[in-house]
Length: 366
Image 1 (cartoon, rainbow, N blue to C red):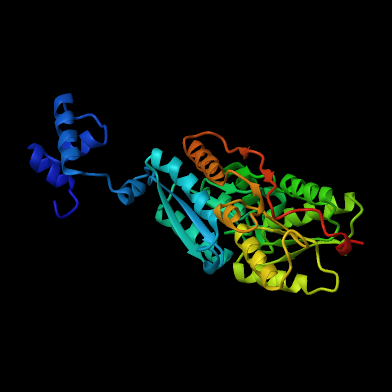
Image 2 (tube, rainbow, N blue to C red):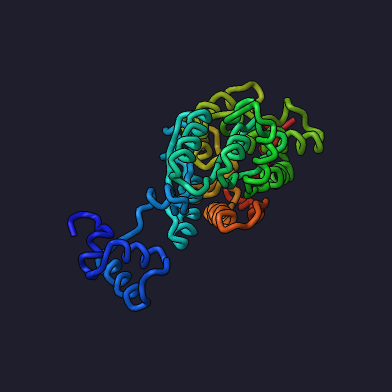
């Protein structure tokens, strides 16, 4: 048919009333088993599917979950992390015949506005929330809306949520409700940073800079704090080991690398928060005539094909990002099925040493 089939079309083809079709397709009594089977057979033949908007308005689930990404749009096309994350999410949702409604917005306020609109329009049954923030307003808002959610990444709901930016700041129960509505899946960012520093310190590096991602993100703060803690434990102060923040793009990764290598005492090792910035850093080092790893070692936080085809191949943190997405989607579907919210942890990442890291040249360390 050139248009979507309707209940009227099914009734005409099956030779029954429209009310009989409604009874049969909604599993209600009022028609015989034989008539119900004939109606369903005709519906399948015509390719009929229930209207998700109508189902939502009647109190049924919409059959969709939402994902809003508040990041600079220019950083998304080159970063593999979100592609892998969404592929894992979609794998689980497709098997459950659940749609994924995806939107990119400019900032966190716009993201919260999308949640309010989706809730009012009954567009989604729940949401997957990425990039937990410091003073994050989203858990309180989702609790206020009673919209089931999974935070993809670690965040302390009792301390990170900021009730002053919730849907209704006059209602103090927002935070406690958030804790009962919002699940989370977590990655061990602190442990991953410890593994990286263990590797570089073991090679003899004492001047290490972490080229971090967006400031304000909880995992950025967690990685910076882990680096500071592990450096102090080894007797290295902020003049030796520190972090600088960027927007995850290749342009800012290159610019940060250029500034760092121009310092009077440049670092002997750089740790980049994604693969794109690390590859940009290698290009800058080549342009400046600084051999990697002869005078400069480099580590990428996320492994990807880029890390494996770059020369030299990049030492990288290997994480199952698609598996992280699958875990988040499974948790959300479990909550929607009635299971209480929970905290789940992804598998531990491992560091894959490659040709981009080596002991520092003798004259570069003091």
